[in-house]
Image (cartoon, rainbow, N blue to C red; front, side, top):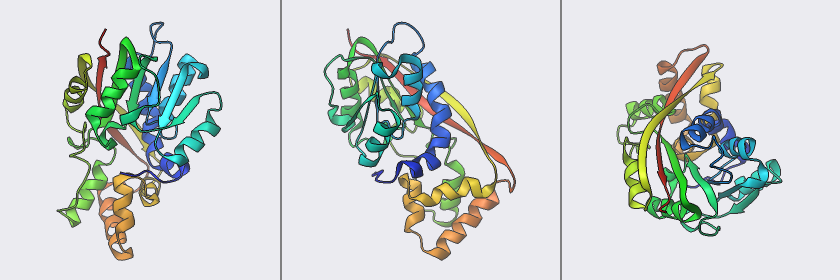
Length: 256
């Protein structure tokens, strides 16, 4: 899946969920104490997790990498003192054992080869360092896009959704991290609640072409798009509302 969209579009679509998630993810990963003094954000996107890492460790102790040129450009402007590089998870442009913690927020399910990408994360963590990833619970129906995909399938039962993506089901991140060579791997779930001022505030980001959901909407003709919008409207309150979204977390250590 390509994310060749502007940073602002991605931020409007997923930033509203990824920013509060980053705080919870960093806590569960263990970026909270003196044992973690450096970190790498793999697939940094527009910097939701990078911001948390910078706040906790300082910009000179954080690096970030992403394959999307618009995101890399935006990140370098947003974090001028952070080492931001262009690159894929499956071939990280960093030395062996360079970081105390290597994290991937909402990235594993879009890796071309998740085990290879996670193995690269293990490689770039110091021996005994933290390697952690999180993915929305798309398979269990409690991710942030659950209402959208339910409305899609009501009108298009054969439409592909995100439930089969790597890491999107319970326990799969643990399996992938173990296959990638991490040790002491554990799994858990975290959740965030995101408010929406109105139905339109919830819906409009889906029209920006971001990710599989945005690509699905963009491929519809005007009539089909209006029909989908109304099916979504029927599933949501007409006034202010909120979405509670759950993500799976896998956490392990690089071998000593």
